[in-house]
Length: 399
Image (cartoon, rainbow, N blue to C red; front, top):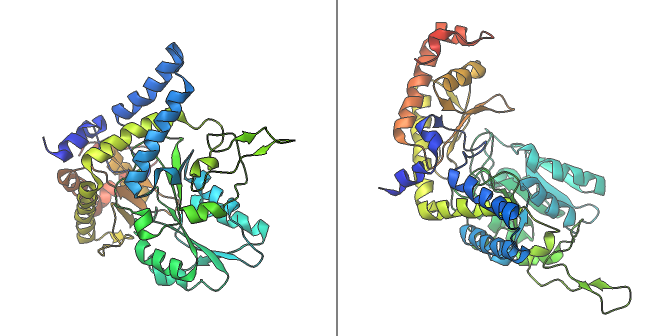
């Protein structure tokens, strides 16, 4: 059995549907579900000791570090990408007149925390992109001497555009600017090296390319940025200890470079157990094989859709493409309805675009099938008219 078939077998949904909705949420492998259940079984029947949970968390912290090319102690567990971004946004030592640069393609998750900084006197600058391409030059047009931070998604949710993080990181580093990356659309499927590339902070949830459960994620923070952060909220943790030997008590000095002080109270241990199993699956398949596989599937789909006359919002340029293909169509709602009726899971975005996003479990034959469906939709005006009605017509259900 080759690696791809083994990986595909982890996802029983592939026997029933063509799942092309990776960018929305990964299908959950039974192995991941079972790992979460195993945690709850321990609590239900024996209540596993807290040291066991902490040891498991440290092991997973190491798995995450190896995946992203960072030190394990630079990784803090969060509940989602939003929490990670907020830790950085509200822990950073902003000064009056400082600004942060974002772009006009970002998901609201990577916009709201930064806009909220305006209440603290921080200027938020939105870089205007051209043809939806989030380039280094587009971002840099809004940078000036008071820019303290640039924030960008590795892969954009609404187009699949892949940013040139390495070039952007080098430019930020040369200018003394912090680079914060939203990695949820990419980490686990595309290569990343936070230390080698020079990323200062990376926030990521587990339920997309990482194949994990909802409610758990991580934040990587480079040691020098970590030393600057003063978290808005603190809680007791392995890295936040009370010194009771002095009058009125005090917090012990934080271990240098230890991101665990950003955690407070119990982390999502069931989610961590599930993430541990998901990371094993990714490690078995290897990002070095997953990335060219999913990029090839997306390229196959992109070329076919363009040939059928669809308007593609995604870039097909090398280095800018990803595993996500987005298209615009005046009857996108009907197209999604038809794809669903044919067993293809995809989604409509808040932008009105239709998005198909592939994982390592997808195959070239599935892309051929998708293109057969889109070809019929494009060529059959009667079918499109039927699909625009409020209720489904039986004639198109399983063409």
